[in-house]
Amino acid sequence: MQPGGETGPEPAALPRSPMDEFEDETARSTPWARTLGLVAAAVVVVAGVYVGAAWWWSDRVPPGSTVAGVEVGGLTAEEARAHLRSELGGVVTQPVAVEAGEKRTTLDPVEAGLELDVEATLGPVTGFGLEPWRLWQQVFGGGPVAPVTQVDDDALDAAVEALSGALATEPLDGTISFVDARPVPEDSAEGIDLDVDSTRQIVIEQWLTAAPPLQLPTVVVPPVIDDAEVERAMRELARPLSRAPVTVVVDDQRAELPVEVVTGAAGFTGENGRLELQLDGEALTEAVLDRTDDLLTDAEDARFEFEDGEPVIVPGTPGTTLDPEVMVDAVTVAGTGDDRTARVDLVEVDPEATTAELEGLGVVERVGEFSTPLTADSNRNHNLTLGASRVNGTLLRPDEVFSLNDTLAPITTESGYRQAGVVVNGVLQQGTGGGLSQMGTTVYNAAFFAGLEDVEHQPHSFYFSRYPEGREATIYAGVLDVKVGNNTPYGVLFQSWVAGGRLHVALWSTEYWEVEHWTSGRSNVVSPTTVYNTESGCIAQAAGNPGFTVTVGRRLLREGETRHEESNTWTYRPQNAIVCGPPPGSRTDDDEDDEDDEDDD
Image (cartoon, rainbow, N blue to C red; front, side):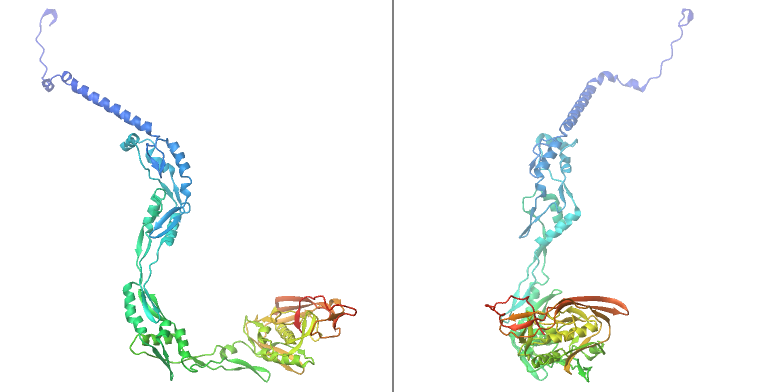
C-alpha cells in the first residue's frame, strides 16, 4: 500500500522450490521414527545389561570349571588362585609316572623345570571381557581349564634326554654264534626311542592332567644288522667255516685244526651294516703250537757280562714266532674256501733287550762300590758267595727299584743256601741263609755312595763292628728288605763277588750325583749285660758291643747345587752276653719276651 492509502502493485511471486513437491514429512514419519527409537533404546538397554553382566561376573570363575581335577567354579579369582595353590601345591612337585612301550620311569617336574602358572591358567576364565563365550560359560557353566606351565627350557631338555635314555629300547642286531661247532643264527629286533620333540610338548601340556602313566610317543629304531644280512653271513662264512677241519702248514710241519677248534676261535662283529668273521689269532696260534714240535725258537736278550772285571755287552740273537694276524688271514681264506689248507711262514722276532739299547744306558764307569770282611763261618761265607752270584749282572734301568730279597729268593736249602747264624728277638740262632744281611749292608753302602734312592733299609738290632756305624742294613725274607731306586737317567749294573776275604759290590753307570755324607758321634751309650736263654737252638755268646744312638746323613748335589738331603737315626741294643739256660737259682725256664725282631748277622 502506498502512502496516502493508495494501493500499490502486488509483489512478485517467489520462484517454486523443488522441495515444494514433497509433503510435510513430519506428520507422515512419526510412527517409523518412534519404532527406530524404541529399537535403539532396547539395544542400549540390552548392551548395558550385557556389559553389566560381563562386569558382574568378571571376577568369578564360571561354575563347573576345573583345573587339573580341582573344582574352582563359582570362586572369585582370588579364591580360585588360593584354592589351586592349596590343592595342587603338593601335586606339582610329585614325580610323574611316564611310559614308553613296555618301559616305565618317573619324571621329576621340579628337576624338569615345570611350574604351574596359576595366574595365566585362570586368566582366560576371570577378568573383564565381552566375548560371548565368557557370558555363555557364566550362564551355562564352564569345564576343564587347561593348566598353563612355565618352562625352564634347558632343564626340560635335560629331563627329556634322561627319559630317552631310561625308556629307549636298543635295537638288537642279528648275529651268528657257534654251538657244538655248528653255526646258529640269532634274529634281529627293532628298538624304540622317544620322539623327543613330541615328548617335550606332551609333557608340557599333560603332566598335570593325564591319567598315569603319561604315555610318551616313540619312534622305531631299526637294527643295523638285519635278518637278511645274517642269512648272507651264514651262507658265505659260517656254514663253510664249520664244514671241515683246516690244516695249517708251517715250514715242514702240519697241524690239523678240528672244526671244534676253528669255530671255538670264531665270532662275528658288525661292521658298516655287515657281519664280519672274526678269528682269535692267539688261540689259533696256540692250537698250532700244541700240534707241532719245537716250532719256535726263543730270542735271547743282549746282556752284560764281566770280563777282566769290566762290563761288556754280549749281543742277543733273534728268535722265530708266528704272527697271529697272518694266522687269522690264512685260516679265514682256507676255512671259507674249498682248499682247507692254510700256509703260514715263521716270523723273525728281535730280542727285547738289544745291543743298541744296552749301549744307550751309559754303563761305562764305577759310580759306587763297597766291601765288607768275611768271618770264619764257612756256611755263612757260602751263602754270601751264592748271594753275590745272584746279584752280579743285575741291571737296573732308570726309575726301576732293586729289591735284594727278590734277587736272592728263594732263600731255601733247595736253592743252595745253608744254615748259619741269624738274630731272632736279639738272640743269635741258626737259620737258612744266615749271613745274607752282610749282602744287604754291602749293597746298601755301594748304592749310598752312588747316590741312588734309599727306598727301604733298616740297620741291625745291635751293632757289628765289621760294618759302618748306622750305615748298614739287615734283611729277613718277607719282613725286612734292602731296596734302592735308580734316580738317574742311566742304567745301573750290579757287580758282586767274593775275593780276598771280603764281599764286594760295585755299581757301574755314568756318574750323575756328587755325594757328601757324615756320621755323628755315639750317644745314649748302654753297656751290655748277661741274658739267660732257655729256648731250643740257643747259641751262647760273649758280651759284645754296647748299645748306642747314631745318625748318618747324606747330601746329593748336581753341578754344586743340593738336590736332596737326608738323615737316618738309629739306636742299637747292647750286645749282651747270652747264657743258654735258666738264671742261677731260677725254678722256671720262662723268659720275658723281647720286642719282636728278626734279622741275620
